[in-house]
Length: 479
Image (tube, rainbow, N blue to C red; front, side, top):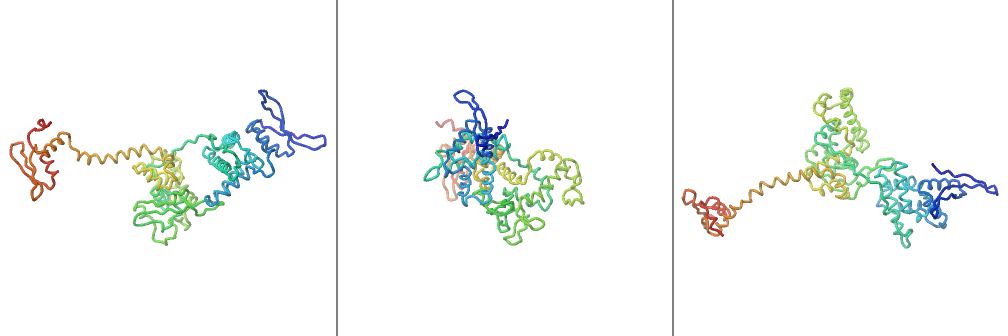
């Protein structure tokens, strides 16, 4: 039950707000209260009392009351920390951080009044629980929010010449366990079905996304000049990003996002490269650059609607009246009907192109460090974490690939008996080999007792021939 402040009247007729609560002192539960001249402050403290309990709420109140005039509050420090990030973080990310501070951190901690040194490990843990239970934040969301607070408190502990806090109270807070969801990638048949459900205009985009493993924002930012038509090289140096409700060009997501990757020449052949180098590689039918939102609205969402229609046996989206240019409903059902239910069970987003491309390369046995580099991941650990479920298939593919070496290896390895016979030839105890003008002449006796000879280009070839064709079992005479 929520604690509610009560308004009381003093003898001088002035009013104040009283918050009554119970707390354990010296092993006994006692009734007590706190008084506030500001009713809004009383409400904030009452909410904090409900969230963290009386002991921690009293400690926070004591920190607030004991703060001197020039004390830096939590809110002030968090915003100052964001300001100090400088150009290492773009303006849009800073705006998101500030919104996170004002909406998710300050209200709980009463950060407008709480000194920065008033944050404790217990208070931080209670905030994490509040985000999880009160707002049903996902583990990843909580980690993002907590990461900002933890980084800012760490900076406060490192502040020079005088640290603002003695240690980082958020450093060891246990966060909700984040189960790494296996990303959904497509099989070859599923890829083909999605391709057939896309309008023909969008199919080059779809294939290029899978083959390049580029993020949709990176793919849409490519220009004609970023493609090398001779090698299939793709230079990724920019990406579309949201900023103040609008899309703008910026840097890729990570430092390693600036990269050169390669796509098959068959994929390059589908691109319209006979245009100015600064023209966007992919444009909408109306000539606008393709952003994630535009692809979703014009290409992806209609394709998913057609997938749902296949599942519902509805022909409506596959008629000439609907402007459909692909395979007929009956042909799609005949070829891909068995895939529809399986495909609908997956989490289908435009990022399926990237996930599928990365997964296919790993399945084909390509080294993970190569895939990680070409995908623009910040580290190999990210690739391994997100696509770890591919490792078994990748290992199997790798084993199959290396198995191809065995016939060559085995072709060079002789059995033990043959190896011993070759040694006898070299020791002069089996056959004879002489150097002649044309190479090396091997002399041996065949199974009929006839002496044979042949000239070989190399000594080793002569040795092998004598060891294989010399009659008689002289091996027993060798120690």
